[in-house]
Image 1: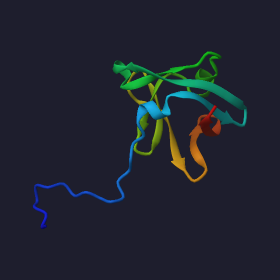
Image 2 (image 1 turned 135 degrees about the vertical axis):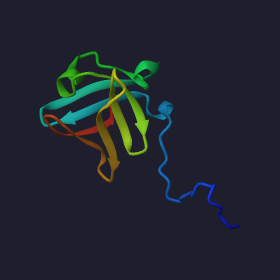
Image 3 (image 1 turned 120 degrees about the vertical axis):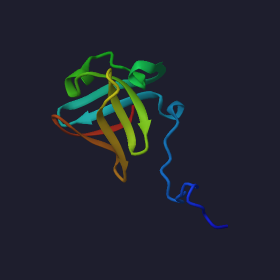
Image 4 (image 1 turned 180 degrees about the vertical axis):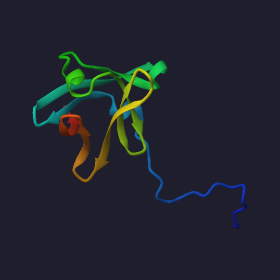
Length: 111
């Protein structure tokens, strides 16, 4: 079947965004300074276009100030600020979820 100019092109290599339900739960952000345990909740924060992050120990604020939520994105998992901006992106790769924070490299893993 021929494609017309009005039809979008579909790629067989399209990126799949993870469902929020599959990512909700306990996570650990590991840095050279130590581990930071957080919980990705399923509680929506519409104003931030994200789901809430619980940071009982307060360590996340020391790593990435201003983070209020998280959201799945095509490239991985974004940590979002209250103004809807992506504060940091943990990109999914062969070594898992990785990012560069203001203090250096970090990995994200289930915890």
